[in-house]
Image 1 (cartoon, protein in one colour):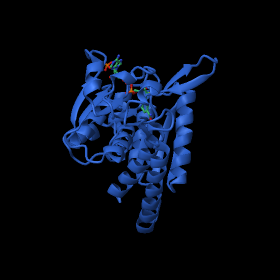
Image 2 (tube, protein in one colour):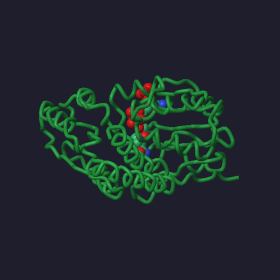
Image 3 (tube, protein in one colour):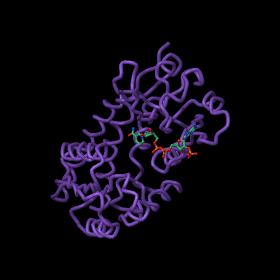
Image 4 (cartoon, protein in one colour):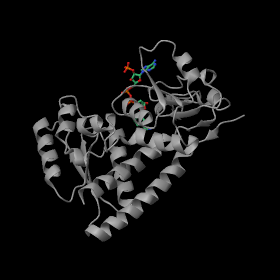
Length: 287
Ligand code: NAP
C-alpha cells in the first residue's frame, strides 16, 4: 500500500482561482482592487524571496501589492510609524510585516500595533483570541491551508484523533484551535512531550511543525493516517547537493500513511494562497 499524495500545488491553484473571482466581484462593487502592503526590514535572502513571491501571487490574483523595504538598522519607532500610516491608508486592506525582524526590534510590539482588521497573517492577539473562542478571525495562513488539505482528504473531522507536533503561535497553536473547532480530539506535542511515538501511533491526523529533518518515523504512524508535513528543512544529500525535506521521514511514511503531503509541493503553496484568501476576506469585511 502506498499513501495518496496530497497535491498542495493543485489545491492552492484552485484556491487562488477562487480568490481571483472574489477579487473581480469586489472590484465591481467597490471600484478598486484589494490592496496588500508587505513590509520587509533588512535584506535576509530567504525573506526577500518570500516577499517577492507574495508580491507576484498578489498581482496574479488581481490585487494591488505594495512593498515597503526598510534598512536592517531602521529604528523600531520608524517601523511603528509606517504601520500607523498603513493602518490609516484606506487603499490598504491587508498588512504583512515579514518575520523575523532584526533583533533590536520588538516584533510583538509591531504585531500588536497592526489594525487587527488588516492583520492578514493572523498574528495579532485579537485575531489569535478570536480564533481560540470561535469568533470570526483572520487565521494564520499555514494552519489555515493545512486544515483545507486535511478536510479535502478526510471530509468530516468530528471525533477524529489529531496530533499536532509543535506549539508555535504561527503554526502549532492555531492548528490545534482549528482542529478543535472542527470537533477533532486534539493532542499538542512539543519538545517536552514524553513518548512522542506513542502519541503518533494513536493519531488519525498528524500535523508535524517542528523544524527537525525527518524526525517523525513512518513506523510510528497509525496505518492509514493523514500526515501533514509543515517542516521545511534544508539538508545536504550524499551527493553534496542541498535539498528540502520535511519533519516526517517521507520514505518510511509513504507505505504506512493513508495520505501525505510532499515537501516541497504540499503545505508551502497553500500558505501563499491562504494569504491571498485572507487579504480578500479583510477587503470584504472592510467594504
Ligand atoms: P518553531 O517556532 O521553531 O516551533 C517548533 C516547535 O517544535 C516548538 O513548539 C517545539 O517545542 C517543537 N519541538 C522541538 N523539538 C521537538 C521534539 N523533539 N519533539 C516534539 N516537538 C518538538 O517553528 P514553526 O515556526 O512552528 O515552524 C515549524 C516548521 O515548519 C519549520 O521547519 C518551518 O520552517 C516550517 N514552516 C513551514 C511553513 C510553510 O509554509 N510550509 C510555514 C511556517 C513554518 P517547544 O515549544 O517545547 O520548544
